[in-house]
Amino acid sequence: MTEAEAKQSAGTLTERRISWLTLLIGALAGAASLALRHRAWAVGLILGAALAWLNFRWLRRGLDGLMLASTAQQGHAKPKVPLVSYALAMLRYALIGLAVYVIFEYLHIPLASMVVGLCALGAAAITASVYEIWHPAE
Image 1 (cartoon, rainbow, N blue to C red):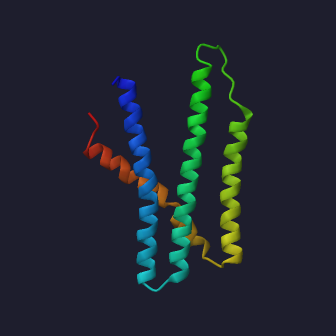
Image 2 (spheres, rainbow, N blue to C red):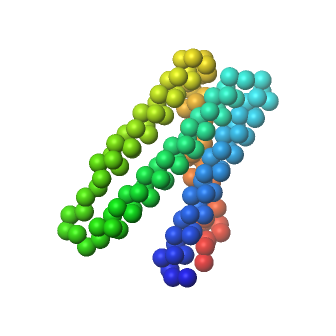
């Protein structure tokens, strides 16, 4: 295995770890909130973490596509980024914003609980980074 392949597989493992940690942290936060008898907050935390997970998956897919486009144009003086990449990035944020609005407006889930649930992605990234520091891939 070459050094580039080793880095790629280590990156893929970290991405998977961040993905499932996002859902786990959201579920644990929701369970803790439910144990404290705050049902609406528990639902908001879980839905926020699910939206963060979905955002991460879409972001990863978009960056993978951008990477393929850039390597396909290797050696060109001015590589071109497909306009679809920009449109999909904006659409991702618009869809998440729309989902938060619908959940807040129609399900009457506290907005703050969804925002805190969205932070599960950041907590998962930090956790995965600390794990990588403690257990470096050789």
